[in-house]
Amino acid sequence: MGKRTKHTHIESQRFRTGLLFILPGAILSIVFVVVPLIMVIYLSFVEWNGISKHIKFVGLKNYINLPEIDGFADMMVSTFVFAFGVTILTITISFIVALVLDKKGRGRINRNVMRSLWFFPSLLSGAIVGILWRIMYNYNNGVINEIFSAFGLSPVNWLETKGVTNFAIIVGNTWAQVGLCFVIFLAGLQSIPTDLYEAAVLDGASSGQILRKITFPMMAPSITINVVTTSIAAFRAYELPYLISLGHPGKSTLMITQRIYFYGFQAQEYGRASALSVMLTLIITAISLIQLVVLKKREEIY
Image (cartoon, rainbow, N blue to C red; front, top):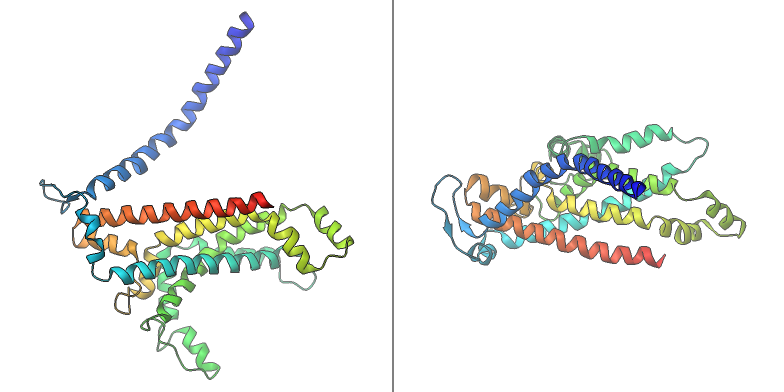
């Protein structure tokens, strides 16, 4: 009986210690995540300018009127094109780079240096990257058009051509996100047992077969993490795409996040801004859940 009491006391002490460790994080999460989320949901059902004491409850009016926002269709299209474009391009490039830099061989540039160079853009703020790419996209003296001219090609109006500008901001954002995905892919590649590759080589498997039958299946968890996190980051992107294109041409590259900022801090229509925020949150949640279900099934198959 005495041993049981002592054991119970130790468990209670461990529970209290664990609770003390998670308490600071839990408090911060409640204050900076849960409470703001509840406030945004509440504000999405009212009309308020952010200053007045008078708050008018309007129910679902803010949600019903969302399609009436000027440029709503362009906003939705540009957001989804941007998010899916960034996700596909980032995952593809980072996976290829990870494969290349995971291999050892003579005559290669120092792998640690190359890894650092690929990861470096992810350390820069979105504002810096946005301004940098806007300068490079400059029609008259941007470095990209200068390279085109050197090869006898016509300059491209990257920042004022519908469709081209959408592609331009996707490339800029991809450049900034490849580093993080590349590191996760590299860690996944290095966790694959070398015995599997050696056995495949002894069985006469080609490089393509090894890639399809061993590398891709073993990398499934890394692919899941990168796809979900990259798509979430792309949907939430604000400063980088805006600083590259400023929403031009017209409003064809304005994102949902940028319209949230406009209605919340410039037009002072907090109800509409909150409704847009809730809509974006629901979109991100739905797409993330779909991705997790589909990709997790793929992991189970392998």
